[in-house]
Image: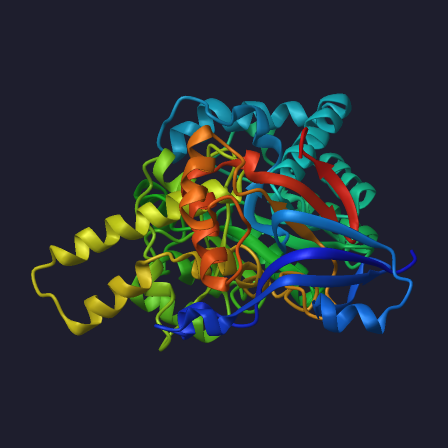
Length: 467
């Protein structure tokens, strides 16, 4: 593709705002009138328009005004075949799986149903501003192939793989370790590193995996050391009790995965609500990541994730944010940020009421606060770093894939426009602080209607009616 320019107001991140307490702006890059130059889907130049434009004479430019342009959102934990059970009457995790999820996911063995559902899934991602996801499919390799093929057709970056589960689910839902190994081996050869596809060895959770199945996951990782590992961990107290009963000899949930050599770089455990301090320390040392899924954790009553704990600079745990749709009741990462903010506030209420308040509690309470800088870092560059794809996506750095979202601060319910007027008085943001105030308003008052456009690899793939 020929080079093209996009001109407008840009916000992205050059560092982790949690490392810049009191000066989060230092981690943030803002161009009131910026120019992004894209060639073959890759960022080749970026900066103030007055500096960048002279370097590219004759460049065709698309101007985007009265909007904020950010890197495309990254969903670190989502389930493709749960689109239709989004909002199913709330149960706790295990009964919810039995009642709603397993029967619905079984329907994706039908090719027509699978294709329709997968296309709706990606359509809704793009309408929500999400351009990259790490996703679960099912134990059916044919359906997993459909997901890879649809992501390829749309040129979207995805991390996924056929799901491993051989116990604690209906017999028609499970597959043997041998069948899982054969399917994963074939799919890795066909899709991993091809286009924008990345493969993840995907044990659904240790509660659904026999020792033989986890040993098969180890074998796959040994044979394919460049792939990812994506699973669930410590989401629900009943789940944890079941895991420890099934996998004797492991002191905690993380220890089950450690036993089979799965914990390290490019490992993600979804949820992590009940991880102990020692488990978090070991994850930090291993370079493993956890995904914070506040919408799901609240909807299923799983618990309050300790954001202030995982962002401790002394033992920082790589953390992506995810919808966990359909346990999460929204596709939108903006709604994830809204609920994440509230979880942080609730955690601070618990800390304030602790029997022995300490300096450590005060520091954790400060880290629980989800400022707009921390929030939008978390769903762009932060999630990219946690997933080990920050060399590809998550920022406007030169060489990154040109995925971005265009946000309308007046989009959403009528109150959104009124709230935004507090900061702009009808004009666009002129400073980074004003842009941050608008971003906070978008995440707390707006919704997916704030997404005016979504671009993938330099091509506009979604435009809201009237945007």
